Length: 340
Image (tube, rainbow, N blue to C red):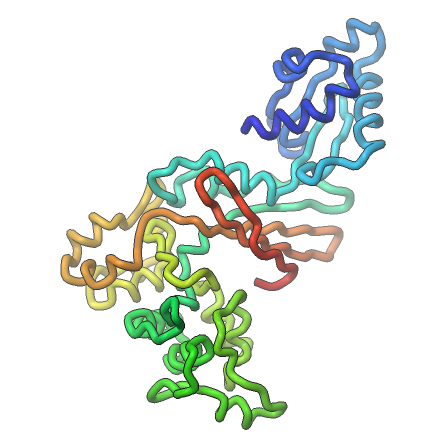
């Protein structure tokens, strides 16, 4: 996590008059989240100047906050002789991803653990990362040229069955995405259906950027959407499902008629130490079934979502940031507030 230290050094070097080596050697990780993500004790410099330790911390803090803080920093406090630095949760999540091992992405790794809460005046900020490739990608219902991908349509049907939703959404969602104007049989919907709505509108016929576009499907209710929402994502066409993080209903849909992954608690227990099921596990359990799905599953992920929940008093709002990881580079693609 060298990036954290570098940000602190950039703030302290003009303020403290100390060397980078001296300052970096003092940076530590506090034992409690209330004391920051990183801290710098000011005792040695207080002794040098023969003034109270808290006076040094307060002086440096005041000089730092008198200017605009870097975008990665939430706040800086001076408490009991320590200079405490609090970083924004989305930034911390991205840094955890950069340090991740390249072989696989699974729920036993550091990125999958909730970040410690960040105290703020009258409330707190909490942060967590989710692997979005553990969900079914709605855009995979079509191919790159937006023709229907029948295997993915069937997979979505199987998923809908397992979450207690109606199968018809598979055909209707496919028609919302595909390039033609011919309804899927038996329960698709193209412009003829949408133009009969009140008010009338047309089928999207484009890839989706948010799963809430499912609410545009005729007959879709909030209750029905909430059954589906936790298991779907809107990612680029061809993005693979990560077996290590796929939710139980999606795994069961992937191996329909093969291995049973319907027990979510047992699945979570099997994932405590690493990836489960691996591609090798599925091949042993059901060789024929694995051959059928091998082209659209894997054990790594490039798409994650940082969830930042802010509570102030009795009010709470949530910020979602869709992150794309390309090697060690992390890019925020979409941000939204209050809804996925």
